[in-house]
Image (cartoon, rainbow, N blue to C red; front, top):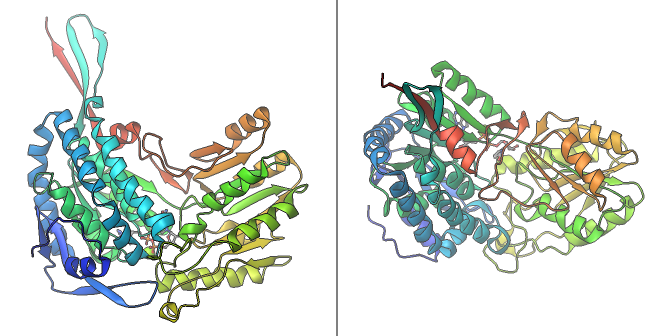
Length: 498
Ligand code: NAI
Ligand code: MG
């Protein structure tokens, strides 16, 4: 199949052109079984394309290509690899509009508030990691005067990257760019809900990289993801997704005794003190809860603890802000909030809304309004919900919903609110909002999370280690540390000169 690299701003045409293909060994490849599955536009329910239903035969072919290419790739000077990865970033930057439009069509995330932004961050991740080639340093060790002793960093080999559908471009970039600079070859398994945009990214990257170094398969977890993890030539797995699947992947990797990085779920607390700058905290709640992404984020600030003195004012102002957000066609520039990714996730979110409604003492606030355009009648739109009057012990405040549903919980005592914030199986992100430096520092030390912020709610940033504690995962991503610790082995070399 041929598909040129000119940016294509018609996402419908691009989705059709990309249909039915994997990309490995430097070229588009049909699925071995010939079976495909449909890719739908969640804003209308219409089929926009198809993807191959990858299985073990496709896995074997892609991993063989990656294994063959990895040796030559690892032999390039580290800075030379870095330059090619940075070049991927430069070329991808020319495709931001194209990729933004396609990911909006495929996932239902609004173009202006989410999808175009994500496509920009994708390019930036490659630019950032591309500069890190010369940081693949070892150490010299003062072991013995007659022995020159040192460590060197070596790639692990073929890396499997398994990604979800909520921010596929960003998550693929974090894994791919770090693994590639370190000298590994990569096989990605895309999420079945969003196989097309990442396929286009792979094609674009392959216009820069040697064939076989970066490959992608589409398919479902048990049929395609599982054989990829189990493949004997895969030497590392980097996974982002649910806790449940993370456990399956971890067990399969344990069978082979290979390292894994796991980025799993969250139920992230946001603590607002009585002295907080209310406007900033409200803006932080909107960003933190990822209302523009329909709450489909592992770091979503879905437990908002607000001091009793400002609780009622905070809730009223938060509702007003979310009410002002526009739900609609993800490709429309006016839209703030698009759709849920799939029917399955839609049902799951609705069941949590019903659960919230049935929770003793809870008040449900439905925000914004459903789109009225008849073209969107079958769209997977969900009005954002704020639940007040719940406690941290209620299921709605304990389980990850992965939808536009947050709990605002009233607090009075600082020690108790820290205890409640930490009373969760998760530990991904946390924020504290106060003008008092001592309170802020105290909270940052005590909060059990991998990513803690004061008076802001930034998303993942290149250069800042990102990852969780407790069931939120293992390992860190997006940083120099992530490349060194998670995509290389350290080798010790001792040269006896006596
Ligand atoms: P999932 O964890 O099942 O899927 C993530 C990826 O893993 C997909 O590419 C999937 O095909 C793959 N996968 C599934 N089973 C596999 C297996 N046995 N071996 C290898 N790979 C496998 O997540 P799903 O079903 O899309 O969403 C369910 C829930 O997971 C969501 O409601 C949300 O709570 C959570 N989630 C968390 C994410 C995060 O960023 N931490 C992202 C997506 C979902
Ligand atoms: Mg699943």
